[in-house]
Length: 381
Image (cartoon, rainbow, N blue to C red; front, top):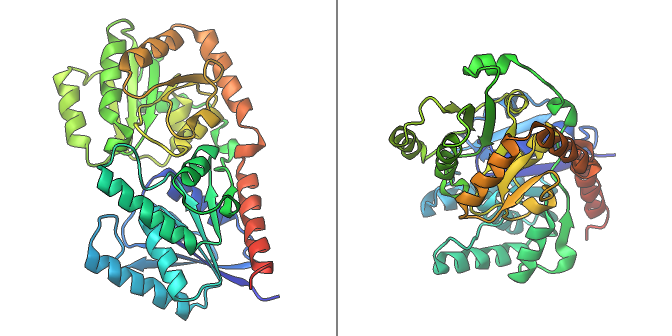
């Protein structure tokens, strides 16, 4: 039986949930059934990791980038078309918003038989200017017409797509993110010493790109509020990005240099999570952030904004607390309540890990995705 030529397209292999999930999928797919190809930007912190995956042919685009650039976008479109034809691609699977548009248009023009897109949170949100939001919705509707299937990781994103008339219901498949639970079942004290954290300190952590969506300045202000009532708390902020200078200025302004640790991007997230007592996420909008699932897999309770599909992974009052966006006082109150009660943290952490179940297991994600490929390939026209 001939192998199926399967191409993944993603804008940039940065250290984000969508990118990490894609590489996990590629690593665990059946190499006896698929010839695997990946088309992406020539920059990205996860490029080296992608290059180590056995059986993957990696193509680094000269033109594909996150920023909108009509000339480069057109050139990258032609690049993808050429790559599809040269490698006789039979299934194209896109990830991330920009690659999702360009990749599916290219696949349609190159007459690929099976076109799939995974929605890692939609390209539009309520914080965009109305004209921009409507344009993004129109692009998603157009691209959905070219798609055999739209994979969503949450019921929330499926409903949001349907509410905005993006594809019909039968085009959607729910396939949850997959976490390798064995990676997150560790307890390592060395990481605290490495980060300069005392044994008796309580530790609050957040993992996020420093961009407006994640609202990291709110994490800094949360540290200020908590520090007024609980002095022995350290705050770890893992990530980097465009807002770093603003974050550093705010830390200095609030005199929190001894309270907040900026680690930059890290490849040892399980070690970081093993060192914290509570996980926080201050996002304004989300799909379903992988960091919340990783915290749960590490038995860490979460205090997170109630956005996107987060409520499908965090049960308010049982595995953590869900806070409406733009309510820093309530977030501070719930976090302080959690930090003051060790038994509550332990119980919520255990509940969080148990609540994940098979739905969010890595093996389940790989199997469901691979089965979808097989069904679509067998029933192709």
